[in-house]
Image (cartoon, rainbow, N blue to C red; front, side):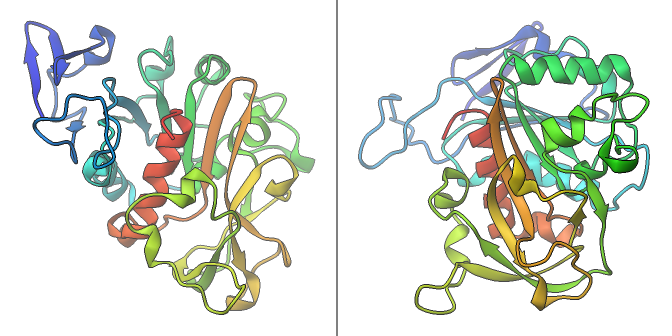
Length: 303
């Protein structure tokens, strides 16, 4: 892996990183930057072979926004650190830029960042201009990944209506896919795979650790987390990837069909959301981070 920064420009393995992306690079302490490139042989010419995954010349550039205007998760620093380490299980170059400044969304384009990760965002963390910029970015083909408390961002009004900033409730219904409605106390429960053939769940180191309890049974694993309930069933307008078994914990309100993670592709946008990830430990868990990495790669149209 070769990363060079010279005279205001940068290159990764000889490929130019857009100048606009370098905004703030001079202050790395406040605006952390990570470039990761692994699993590529020094002699790999990018053509790909039976022994190597294809080489993608352009890195997946990710903007990680962790601004909160409501509850703030203590695990946010762990999440940011994990997102900077993501490339360790992928041959795809991953570049992460973390920010707490939602104004960084203004003027953003898929050419600058392939994916925006909403890491534990909460409350009305966007103003009208920032929300409009995020909406334009998504409609232009930008990928969106929401983690855990992102479903509590831009909370809708009563009956699922929009709020003062998000008048039509687009953030909850059109972007994330459902709005957070509460959770019981953290406890152990069982996560089940709803679609093991989907690229987000079908590839990546770590997903092999899931267990199949019985012949014909679903892949599943035990997990300790906040088990989010939602105002509407996400299955109504999303492709469900993970569900939970409400009989394995107390406080679920969704019934037999309780989605936890899903994705959607509509109006040129790909988005992925997972309700898992409350605690620091999640961000060092191999299965969970394979889930996140694949969600990013899928949203960026790399898998």
